[in-house]
Length: 397
Image 1: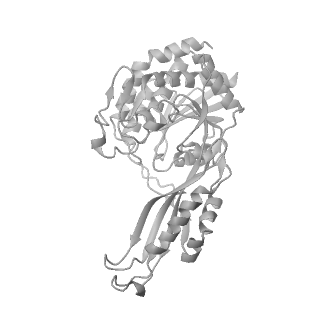
Image 2: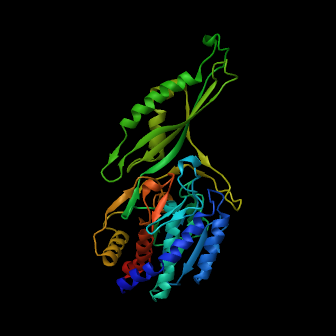
Image 3: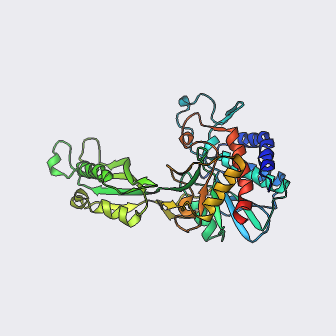
């Protein structure tokens, strides 16, 4: 395998990857609204002569090259978050922009750049005759921003897709990532009794009861476990709601959402038990439970799941990690930074739930995700396409 030829071919395709990425950026594709971008990706895959292109009942698009016995998958979620306050953008987030080094627009780093690189990696494999005893599945997954990993729960459980390993093309700031903290979405509910606001002693104020719980949650965060690689477990209160007959009444209900990040050794049972054990939670007889995600995909399919996304770590000495490092060193003649994501990815189901090895290498930077004036770098697109094309050969040799 000639690594210089692979890198050169990836560089040759930089204009096509740039055009493809800009086309995707121009199509608004928030979660559950990905149909138009799926059609654009299908067009690109068919134009590049993928062996097979299909869209599953959830709406994920899967392009395949090769027919060998070793199944390898590349994954990019193709939905984005919204643009937020347009005044925070220096350019139109969907029209985007391009200069010699960068491409701007919503989804540039998170995570349509990964889709551009992996589609052209398949083209490089075909161009250079790098096919071997493997089948590469290029997956454009939906609804990740709403519910990370849901798409892969469906692909694995319902479509029977079980690759030997998966490359997540989420942005990795130029490094190779082999893990992330997990997360879960927890709801805490407190009941009270309403009364006229002029005589609050006649009622039971649910907001006051929740206030005690909030203070104890803040101190619980400080006591959570730390792992040497993934770091500390954490929690924060992200939302608060209430019910009350009027502004002149005692609140008879108060609810909060807790964003809980899970490090190694923490799971849903532990996280729920820690909150349920708080004295204020017990005193208030509060209900503590996970949220359920059940929004329909753009194709109308509803696939409910608990809002629980386990942590995962691929060992540094694992065959997949070592093959990825080898591909990087042979292509770029330098030692990679091996690290982990701060945020969550589809790896929560791929490896966290199902134990399928997952490794990360993707164009762009984590700090660009969900931020205004989002950009990615053309050099990243090239380097990622080259590595994706070289990786199957390094893995199988």
